[in-house]
Image (cartoon, rainbow, N blue to C red; front, side, top):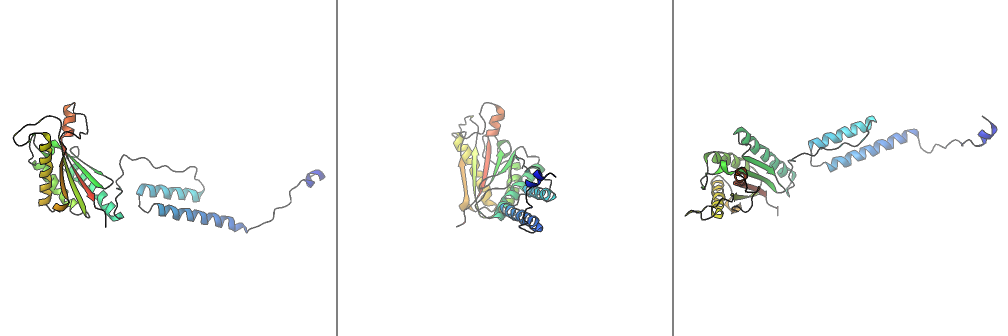
Length: 240
């Protein structure tokens, strides 16, 4: 080393902390992040939890290169209800059980169930529920309602709203002057069945929308079949 280079040599740095403190502070920081993440995941989502666990494992091993991403699912079976976490699990479980019943009866295309912001929604096609121009429950629809009520009656305090919908083909009979009367009578028939099988009548309601709330344009036979339907909404009451 030349004298000139020795003049510009940096003086040795003073050791301000013990060598083990750097690793210790890193460990404490990771633990803090871990418990903050656990708090954020207080409503457990299995897939997100697994991703979080993988992230921390990779971080501790020193091989984390990027943050993991959560795949967008077509449907998330965790409702955002006003009740407690137990009620939310009950609603998600009820939706899954109803789907299993529909699959067992080979009616998965005719019976659809979704978890909503306030509970669950069940849609039953008109081909399964009623004969054309009639408000008499079909035998297969009665079988579905029977199993459905067993599940609904296990759920917490609830309100049940039944909606009747038709296509836009006019009906003019002595009993049903229009689709309004037909859709209302069908919704009322479902409500009466539910009342006879354990539902609280004070929390039951029936609505007939006729052809005025279609889910598809009434321009094909397939679309009109889809528009003829019964929709059942099981909604949780706000706790006082």
